[in-house]
Length: 98
Image 1 (cartoon, one colour):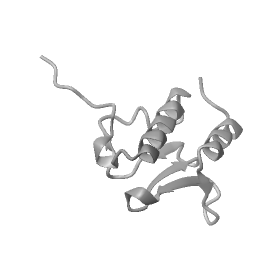
Image 2 (cartoon, one colour):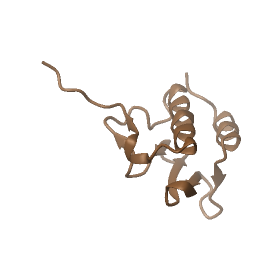
Image 3 (cartoon, one colour):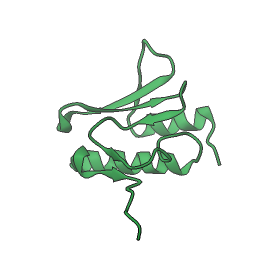
Image 4 (cartoon, rainbow, N blue to C red):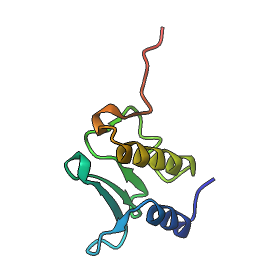
């Protein structure tokens, strides 16, 4: 199930994301404990941009297609807030088969 635009904004605001004034469709949150690491949510592209230090094995958790992706975002936010380093977070890790 896909969340509505207003539901996503409500969630983002609740966990501390702010709107970029110059960009009407982008919200962000910076993590000062991690050298101002930034996660952005881009409504125009319908993407959650986790930055370069969080490992993404697949991009299925960084789009707006499923409401579960925003649960992942909230979990990543909580982990960073609690002190986990971005480099220690891996989403959709791909394991070798065989």
